[in-house]
Image (cartoon, rainbow, N blue to C red; front, side, top):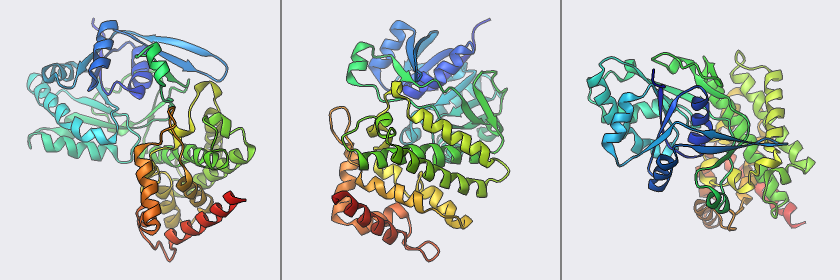
Amino acid sequence: MTDPVIVIFGAGKIGRSFIGQLFYRAGYELVFVDINESLVFELNRRKSYPVIIRAPDHEEKVVIEKVRAVHTGDLAGVTDAIIRAEIMAVCVGKTALTSTAPLIAKGLVEREKQDPGKPLDIILAENMRDAASFFRERLRQSLPPSFPLDQKVGLVETSIGKMVPIMTARDLEEDPLQVFAEPYNTLILDKKGFRGTIPDVEGLSLKENMKAWVDRKAFIHNLGHATAAYKGYFEHPESNYMYEVLADTGILRFTREVMVQSAEILLEVYPDEFTIEDLSEHIDDLLARFRNRNLGDTVYRVGHDLYRKLGKDDRFMGIIRMAVRAGKSFDRILEAMTLGLFFRAGDQYKKMFPGDVQFHESFRNDPGALLEEICGSSVVRQRDLPAEVSSIYDILQEKRKT
């Protein structure tokens, strides 16, 4: 008997530290598909890689074995991997999903020729809403009209809650394959997305109402994390790490208030999925994980990419729109979002994310236009959100001067 094979598109931090680790522990052979030639070479040379699990009070090194890799340019190799796969996963980021779809489609066509009717499930390890619909349309564009996409290809949405810090240049010089991660190892995924047999893998948590759990991740975890980074930078711009800013009890309290306000909105929208006790326990657990000193997560990593994180459908405006429809308060969430307008944290080299430089230039040149872009609409049920954000910004600006 040969080991079952999982093909993982994307050999980055989530692919290796989370998806790869879970399936390796369940006895799978890992085949990574990646665009990085040196990474592919090194994975094939060593046939293993280390995951350094950083708990608050200790470290554990886990060596992941039974590993090989295929470069995205090796079309025959990628197709062969898809043909042989028991299951697949995609963790390349939303931007790269579009370019990845034709490559996967080619493999699906050849797989169907060789083994007609055999289903293949693809775990979409991407933190995005409606990921299955998004990727299905990209696949459909590259598949023959007669291909049984809906019947034979399962597109399984997930909620990725694992935190993986940025690897510094020094870390990568020490070992280009090592990856750091927190101990959390639960993969929440859509039970209804599967077309084949659901794999028996410890750590998989199957949900019936996946939309609710994707929203919980976006509007409690992502929102809370960004809130702590933005409030933390505003109060302590000299601090580099999340555990440093969250040592400030005022920042910790504000972050929790924002997360609780969001939880109250989610309870209104999903009354049959969550309870206040469940969400409160989840918030407290997240705040403890955010303060994991040993993880070394940075304010820069958590807060950068302002165009996306302050976007009209992302962690702040997404829940604000839900609050408006539900008739719930969102004043603390709006303040947290406004704090993002002050965020200028830099990476290990003190350099800002290029998109954030452009963001601040746009805000200086035409703040009204940028706020309209963020809020998505100037008026939401008689509320002029850009004007409200501008007013909060002015108050915070005055506070900063004192």
